[in-house]
Image (cartoon, rainbow, N blue to C red; front, side, top):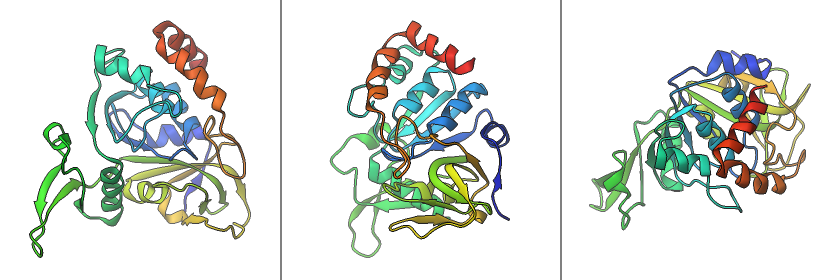
Length: 267
């Protein structure tokens, strides 16, 4: 089976359901912001949001009331400061209470790898010397049966839906991306269903240095969304909009300002 190429609204309606575990991944680059906005527009609720580095797209989803839980390893408005809608949800339960599950970057990456590999958990050197295991039930010490070394086990991540942005796809749904590739491949392979938004669809994927290709059989839906990573960037297609990140700080600090922004998104 190859991926179906459909409009973004149709893809989100088909793939993302209330109560799902949803991962929107992208590290600095190729963040699927347009897909996140479409989830907001469609009014999804009680989502468990998973992301290595929640930034403004998750601030927006949390502020819109889409999230019940956040599984993450770092959260912030990169280069600017805090995520104020995230903080408001944790500290004041506005617009709804938010449960959090915190890991390290290495822990999250290894959890995706385990999920993509069909394994129940991942083992890594990490977390030792921190108190995360005292606050996070999904972190557990494990002893190596060969050396006796104490390591850390974390359960696999297998989201209901994995969403990423990429530069291009062909008409068979094969996806090509390059630059900072993060955990794009792992989250798509680990998820039960997947959506890739792309800058363009072409007849044939041209050879590109450093590019990764996801085969169409591994992807559920592809949607053509030029600029779908804005205000992050897509290498070779767009630049990072630093002014937007700065502007978001003021919008997200104030509930009334945020609700004005949300009304525009929903219009």
